[in-house]
Length: 234
Ligand code: UDP
Image (cartoon, rainbow, N blue to C red):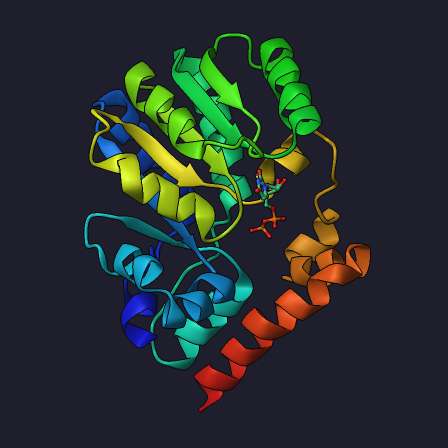
């Protein structure tokens, strides 16, 4: 566990965004893995996910206060959390400013179509190469289309660990581009779901807001965050 915490990006969010800007400008490839307790706990019994976390070429960001605090507890300093949605928002902004191309894969059909309409209106310089909802029968077909179209940015919102695994399966074929699994970000970016109010985010209580508004998350929270905390304590 400590090995994975050590690999997390430890500087400020803004500094990370500068790295991304540079990658995009120079058409580098990057696979960003947002690491949270769920990723780490699942990787204990999931070899495919474990391999993704061990791949030195991937870029790991601390997605959530639990990993930031856990790292600090074992003597690893991390500046702040950098969530999937923070990165997704930044990528849309920079794509609009620089006319980059994107491909979005994931979420329900109504969510992705609202988001695409919003991008066309609010980020009109973005070149949308393609998109798909995340409930298609054949996910591989979509990934093959993504590889063919060669976007500057590819965001996959299928939830952990499916998004990371499908990216890992195709990433070696990508010629360029930022690839990232963004979880429930499309729901929030489309306006279909609300992100926690700013005060929750500021106080690092976003996880609490998500449980209150979606009590069905409690079991997932127990299996990932609570077990993770116990493990770190031990
Ligand atoms: N999802 C999908 N296909 C599936 C299962 C889930 O596209 O087969 C989407 C779902 O609609 C949601 C996202 O994956 O937009 C996962 O969201 P969740 O809130 O679980 O992710 P988190 O942010 O908690 O990692």
